[in-house]
Image 1 (cartoon, rainbow, N blue to C red):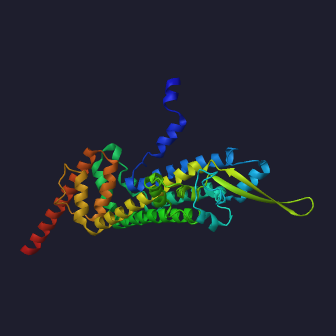
Image 2 (image 1 turned 180 degrees about the vertical axis):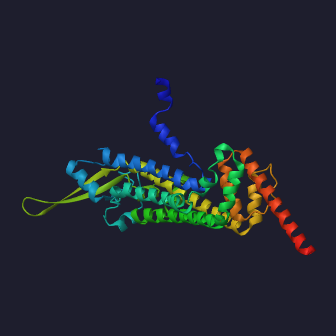
Image 3 (image 1 turned 90 degrees about the vertical axis):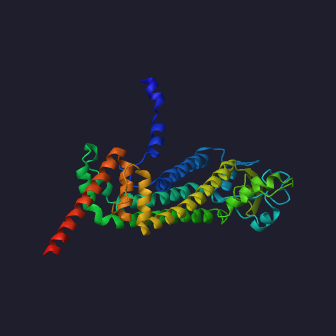
Length: 363
């Protein structure tokens, strides 16, 4: 029992279940990238940032400050280190022009909201899948495959024929959810951009340029865009009331070690969202082509079902779309038998129609 428990700890099982496909499978790999892989990346960042922000007492360290100082600078945010100290006491260089434009305004006030931001991004990524699974899909694939385990191909074919009138709208609804996936990426990027003081949309190109070109240019010092958005060394100005009734001001130099993770994580998130958006756009073009061109849709289906010739089958784009979904839930032998059954029924129907026409012509 002990070795088996070591091989299958609960955490690993939950992690593997995250990538386990639905039964029956009703989407495709691109859709899974949105509702499984994206949410996994977001959940990983959420857990790491939440632990750093609220469970790690070293999230912020201020030189010469007490607990009040740390709490104040954490809650109210801190600003860039003064331009006269950039490059001298800080290894995270921000261009003086940006420091001056900030005018000692807090640039880390977003800290408290990062877990909430990632929670919304998680919900955005899951929303289209839930709409498809719980609303638009309507259990059609499950209804068609209800006798799949018994290999009752005639029953599956009968269910396929009964649902056939809904296949076009079924495919259109799936495309709507694919569009929603792309919209949710845009909404996630926009929300993150707003929270990070309008510096996220261009964060990826700026960081990649810095990492591959500027950092090795030999110029000293070089503006680091990661430190602009996620500074690791900041200045914190605290104003408190004195016993005499006046205001006392204190300046502290603070370290935000969490931003070492945030710098790399949000770069990863930016790259992932942009790549996924490009793939989603290509996926929508592909979906439109399959809807508009039934012959193309039938050709794509034939690539995955090579043992049965589909040239003579009368299949609409909606038929091919549903057969694609069925193919993901059936073993090759079952799928071949189903296609052969469809072909047999179509030939039989055509023969009956030809016979009826012959009888009418004889009359």
